[in-house]
Length: 203
Image 1 (cartoon, rainbow, N blue to C red):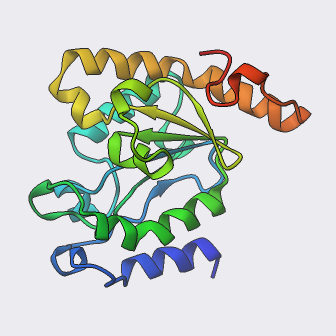
Image 2 (image 1 turned 60 degrees about the vertical axis):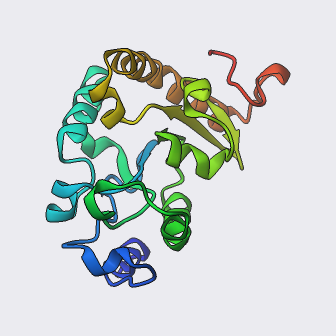
């Protein structure tokens, strides 16, 4: 049994917080465990809870559309959420729920070692840069513990606002170049320019 399978089984059996009591299925994650890009959302919704797969509702359809716009499929990336069980009535996850799931999230990042982590929405972004707002940070890659975090609006928010939808599409359009830049840096050992320690030069 692989380490990843063991982790999925642990998530499926988890009872660390109250969300476990109301779930139909836990939602560990979906996609390639060797992906260059890891998308992290907030938490499962109704359809995700039913199927055990993240981003399969309307927000998931938009995510699929955005991936297709840059030549990627779900199978090419890894998709997960900050919390692995659905909060009741799709409410925001509580801090204790996020902290209960944090070891699973950290283990996923460690196993997959993505070149780019796309933080979808404020809860995901706050894991890496607490206290900052997604509105000001979106579209600007950041360095975090040797990894690159790229904040974007959550697709669910983009469904409610044409302006946010346009911003999400714009940010997605920059993702292929960002992946190439990070790949080049990993292969050559090149360091980012001094002025881009917190914000990548291409943005």
